[in-house]
Figure 1 (tube, chains in turn orange, brown):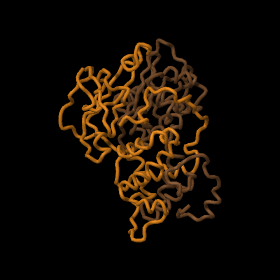
Figure 2: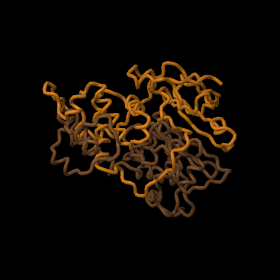
Figure 3: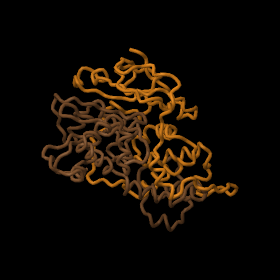
Figure 4: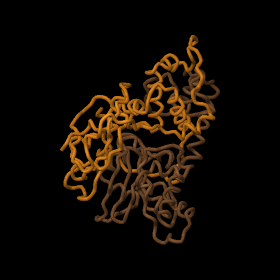
Length: 219
Length: 221
């Protein structure tokens, strides 16, 4: 979707403000939101792409106004409700419905170290050989999908060169919508800065973007 | 306000956010209260174990952070064979360091040289190599950095106090897939006699994102 989250190349967002000696969490509630996101992921009702898409679907004004963990909180509530794990009435009252049964938490404290070490693995066996070869020129498709995609707007229509083949990876555009992993070859593609941004960009600079095979055409 | 938490708890937690509209006005607007209410509901339904939440927070506050990445960088500086393996297949190479990451990782390490500088961003969200750098700083996740790193990397670096010569090539890595990127910074001049541990102490987080260089002054951020 052409959302405000897809902000590569936008102007007017203000200065970058690095904070000296920044804490991991700025308030205890941020840590709780972070941990609730990790712990509820273990319920298996959504995947990482669906999580990202739930954040992207926040109203644009909210997306820009909210802090990072406010976005995580709002999107988590959306996912809990959309997946049927909790009802709107339960969220409003803060209490479980009388008729609801109590589950057993899928993630316990003693399982946390193993969970943390086991970041997801997204490469899958490839059904077909890669369509493109290293050094081959490719053009990122000019498309505007309504759903989740990881093809940034600033790359669409631009010509780049295949830099590396990462193997077949889970396809976010289908996985985010629970339409299957549909793995595709994933490529690191090098785009000259001038191809993306025009003649004012430095001649030798470039941007490397990871792009799935169906995002690309031969150039 | 109709949350599962007692009114005393709310009173003790103080101020409400001002001037902010929410879709559900009946919910407490202070994030602290909203999160407490949500957590208590999820615990009541048996979906989360509060002890697991504590353990997750403790892990990312105290156990996983940029010191992991700094160890990898220092090892690469003192061990050329390790560096070769790291640049060829970082996910496999970092398992040699055990503590940094116990599982395979979709990780690429990209090397800075006198002629080339690498910078990592995630324009679409906030993808960041957690196992080696911990959770990202706020600026990395912010709109100013995400919007400008790809179109104006030199301006961004200047804001971090890093002025690169026009002759230096800049490569920006948009981590828009599950691949994660870690910059291998240049080893600072004058560090020739330092031990691996001393070198690791010099490596700051920002140098592994690409918004700083490593200096003998050490790890400020």
